[in-house]
Length: 70
Image (cartoon, rainbow, N blue to C red; front, side, top):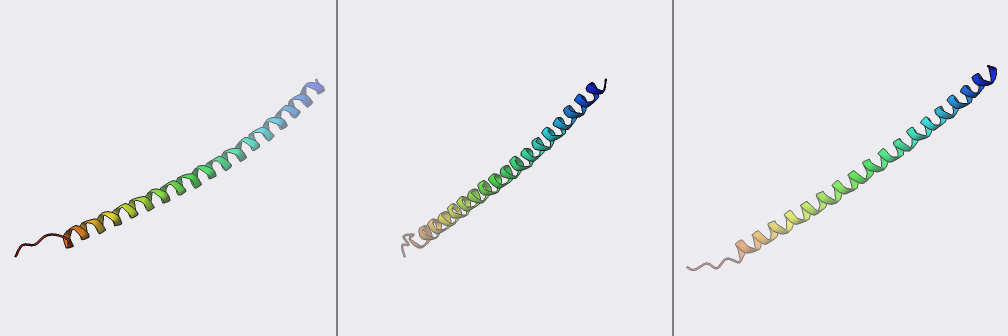
């Protein structure tokens, strides 16, 4: 019976170590997802800002280039 109890203790210890490793892996993956989302959002914001600026410049150019008949 002592052997069964010591075997259970070894198994419980192994399970605790496995859970700790899985939690560590999960924290790392979550961190990577956050970084990836941050980078993607930053790139998207830069594209939107650049496109908005280009459109504004085109509209300004069109306004200044209108043919005016007096």
